[in-house]
Image (cartoon, rainbow, N blue to C red; front, side, top):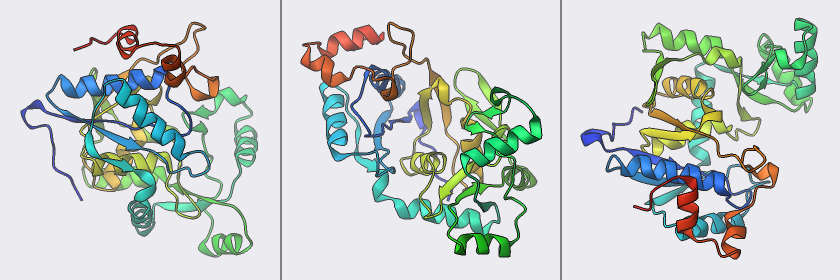
Length: 298
C-alpha cells in the first residue's frame, strides 16, 4: 500500500525511535532534539517509536525511564506511541509477501561459516571484505534446492531468511522505478543496495530484522523525513530497496553528526556512556543539556 505524503505546506513528520535496552545518554538526547527541531522548523510533528522487538534485551523499566527522561528534557510528541512488540503481524505479512515474490531464502550459515567462506574466496584480511552489516555474505545457501532447504530445516539446523538482493533490484528496475533516495543536505543519491550483498530479513520464527521493521514502522507512522546518525547513512540504500519492494513511500533523509565524549568515543551503551539519569541525579538541568548539545532553548 502506498501511503500519501504529509509534506504539504512544507510540514513534515519526523520520529525518534530508541531501543529500551538501557538508559538514554547524551547521544540519544542529541538525536531526539535533532528530529524535534527538524519538525519544528517546518511546522511539523515529532512521533515516538519504541523499538522493542528484541525481547531478550528490551526491558519495561528502560521504556518507562526513556519516556520520563524525554519528558524531563521538555520534548513532546504526537500520540499514539508505536511499540514494535505490538505489531508483529505487520512484519510477518511483509516477510510473507517477500517470500511469495520469490525474493528470500533460508540461510543456514553461522557468522563463522561466512568468515571462513569469504576468506577462502578472497584470500584477503577481514577488513577488506567487511560491508556495512559485517562480512558480505557470499551467497552460499542461495542456490540450494527446495528439497535441500527442507531437509536442513527438518534436521533442526538454525537459519535466518536473507533477501536475494540482486533479484530484488532487477525486479524493481524492471518496473522502471526511479532508483534513488533523497538526502536533504546533498540531494538525490543513487541507491546501491548491492554493496551489502544478501542481507538478513528475518529469523526463522519470522521475527523481522531492524532493516525490515524500520521501513514498515516509518510508513505506518507516516514519517516523511527520517533523521538519523551519520553512521546509518549507508543502510539507507537497503531501506530504500525494501520500501520499493513493499510499495511504501520513500521518505527524505537527513543525517546528523555523532556526538563524541571527552575521549573522542561516540556515546553508546556499549561504551558505558553516562546516562541522562545520572546527569539528572548530579543536578544538571535540561537547559544546560540543551545548550551543551548546541540547540537553542526556543
